Every structure is written in structure tokens, then in C-alpha cells.
Length: 314
Ligand SMILES: Nc1ncnc2c1ncn2[C@@H]1O[C@H](COP(=O)(O)OP(=O)(O)O)[C@@H](O)[C@H]1O
Ligand SMILES: [Mg+2]
Image (cartoon, rainbow, N blue to C red; front, top):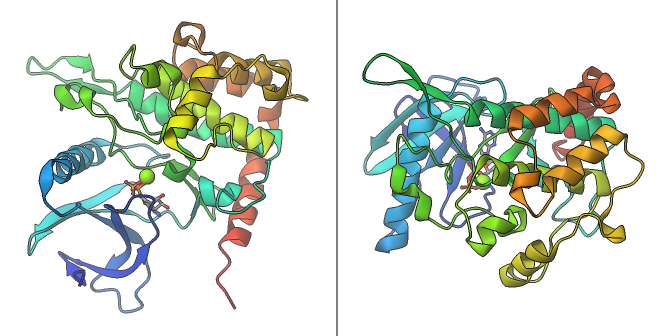
């Protein structure tokens, strides 16, 4: 039986999650008599064994990051605590759905979005990723130093779309921040279908360029209306990623502006050295694409489409 109340909050109902270990609940302030779900609460995984220990360490790490983040494309942190042995964190609820649901990953027929919508969603995401990669902190001498954070699990389930047309990046469970947890590097994390080939082969640890590859896989999917890497098991998926060739005729995305075409092509390159040097460069290139001109319109179109997808059953 799950706890009903944690700190000043009341848990209302469970949200579907991709992993069996995570539990996320719609939440309201305990004093809110109308039970409006303005928050979500994420609970720390329970259970014994080495894996559970590791998951708990990752959860603590995620809480530390959420506490210090301050960005319009990342859900705000409200509280964390422990009550009756239940460790939890409370965040802003993004009222909408995740990108996987929006694209119809669970249906037979996924949908493509317009080029303008693709550029809008990717611009918002690249903004959040640029913030993480460029994170700084003040060291013990009072000096501002680089403290870049890699997300390492950029995939459509971790992208939230709101009924206001906001695009938010969530789930920092797999994130790596060398200043907080240097040994975090060895853990095999992230959804395989969005993982860069160099991480699969194991030749290099995660880098900013491996996050860019994951972003580009999402961009490809949004534009094509089909999954880039989908096989019946992880092994086959990983095999498809290491063999992937963006210049192959069946893999190309046609009908794009030169700029947008370059963003897809360069960041899906097998060689991380040929991708953009930073999320900021991707952000700049997206802003220069002619499809970016309709960003504000895309935002309101997205709001309407998310409202349609998440319409409560009548
Ligand atoms: N702040 C939030 N607002 C609304 N829904 C959320 C929020 N955070 C997570 N979710 C939902 O819960 C799902 C799982 O959360 P996530 O943090 O990705 O955990 P995990 O992938 O580790 O199970 C997300 O895919 C999303 O659908
Ligand atoms: Mg997730």
C-alpha cells in the first residue's frame, strides 16, 4: 500500500512509468481541498540487492540536481524528504503528456509532425540540454567553474509536452555530473534505442556529442513519423545503431531546408567528432533554419494538439 501523505503533500493517483522501479504520482498540497494536481511526486525505488542500491544512489543524485536547476524547460523542484521510510521528491506537474505518447509510440501508426513543429520542439529541448551542459558552480575559492551535466537518457519518454505548448526535459536519473558523483561514469544507463553508437561500442564514455546524437534520433523520428531504431530486442537495436548510415537513401529525410537537413545529418553521424561541437551550436542552427520562423504559431498548435491527445474521457 502506497503512502497517501508525504510532508505537506497528498498523493492522488499513479502515472504510468516506463520502468518497473519508478513510481510517479499526481500530487496536491495537503491543504488543497479540491485536490488539484499541481505537482508530481517521484518515489525512490525500494527493494534489496545491488541494483536497488545503485538505483537509490542515482535517485539521491537526481534530487541533488533537481534542487539546483533553474530553467524554464526543466520542471521546478518543490520539496524532498523521507517519511516512514519513503524517500521522495516533489516537482511541478507538467499537465500534458510525454513525447512518446504524443508521437503514438504505443500505437501501430506513429505520426510525423510538421517541420516547423519539429524545429520548435527541438529548439526548446536543445535549450534545456545547453543549460545542463553549460552548468557552472562556485568552487571553494569563490570562483565560478564549469560543472557540465550530461543527461545520458534523452528519449521521448523524458520529454514532456504541456497543454500550454511548453516542452520540458525531465528524468535526470541517469545524468552524470563529475563534481557530484565522479564514479557515476561506469553505470550502463539510458534507453538503448536513443544511445549513440560510441556508447554502445563502449569506446568512449558519454559526452556532449552523445547527447546530441540522442536529440537527433528524436528529431529524425518526429520528421519521418517512424522510429529510427526499433527492433525486437536491445541487442538487435544496438546492432542497428552501430550499422546506421544517415547517407543511405532509405534513411535520408527529404523536403527539409538545407539548414534543417544539416542538423539531422551532422548529429546522426557515426563519428562523434563530426557532430556539432555543442548543444549551443545546435540551438543556433535551429534558430537559423527557415522553419523556425513559425515558432510562436507552433507553440499554440502544440498546445491544441496536446489538449486533444490528453482529452479526459467523457
Ligand atoms: N514533472 C512531471 N509532470 C508530469 N509528468 C511527469 C513529470 N515527471 C515525470 N512524469 C511522467 O512520469 C514518467 C516517468 O518519469 P521519469 O522521471 O522519466 O522516471 P523513469 O523514466 O525513471 O521511470 C514520465 O515519462 C512522464 O510521463
Ligand atoms: Mg524516464
